[in-house]
Image (cartoon, rainbow, N blue to C red; front, side, top):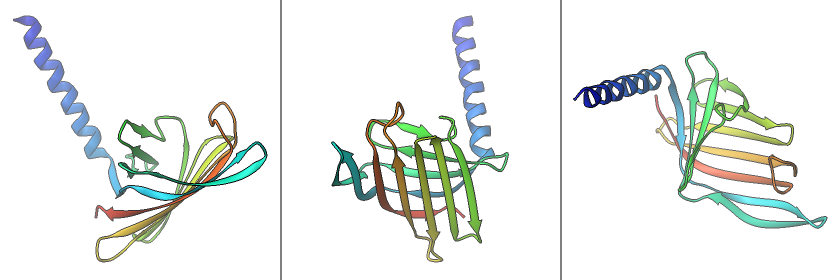
Length: 152
């Protein structure tokens, strides 16, 4: 009986902590699946292919300390840029234009250009560049687009 009560109490405290964390951060925008092209280096030759995150999303968060996080989700997992140690710089021009730069390491950099429309929609254009290293299996560059919705 005590074990059950402790389990319920722990579950309640865990949910309360999650709820407080969710209330403390602000969703700037959420974007859906990304489509694009990548170019990669294969035996000193450039090769082009379609690229993207088909069943995924990208969410931009403003954290309570004023910093930003970017959460990507695909069919298999979710990934927090800030949680992984990426340095994220957020630049805002009004409420409709935002730029985020994420530096994961000395070899991986991503730039996100987010434009939100007055009708409630938006678009994301983003690039990712990766040099072959322990963090990136190949040297490649990608350009993607995605549809977004602001949360105002």
